Length: 173
Ligand SMILES: *[C@@H]1O[C@H](CO)[C@@H](O)[C@H](O)[C@H]1NC(C)=O
Ligand SMILES: *[C@@H]1O[C@H](CO)[C@@H](O)[C@H](O)[C@H]1NC(C)=O
Image (cartoon, rainbow, N blue to C red):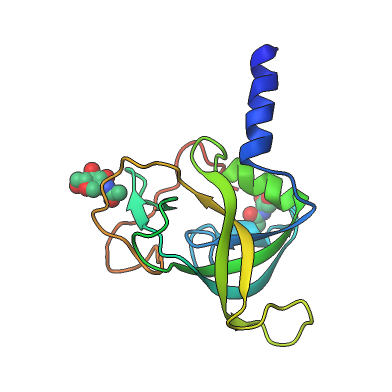
């Protein structure tokens, strides 16, 4: 009982609630990547692509573990300014992503500053290229990993040959 209250408290701090939120994805959830289909599945909620963006600060984006999972390490100042995509998501999708990403054990969700690349031209709510936006990001607060190689832009099918493997504890849906 006590433990579950403490866990709820920890989860609410590390995975904050938001009604309509922005999420920056840089790995397997990007368009064309192995988990993108989950963003399109409306039984998980709504996700609307807003724009491509680049982190304002450099971060180490590494491919790690035996599953070759991309992780942005929460160590600003090292690595490269990472490219990814910003989505507007509803609470249902955010809850799904928290579960899928294993927040707060595997990844922690925090806010990050991003520079908008090419906006999805048109809509009033589309961020302007060059503007600075904030969004949630699933990153890893894990200071001890060696930085063998960092990437500017993740591609599961890139010539690094590190084929992404869906971990057993991640739902195939
Ligand atoms: C969408 O998600 C639901 C719930 O997890 C699942 O039952 C369904 O198979 C998924 N559809 C696709 C196309 O992945
Ligand atoms: C770095 O290389 C070592 C040895 O090959 C490997 O075990 C480890 O997973 C790698 N770490 C990262 C972050 O790529």
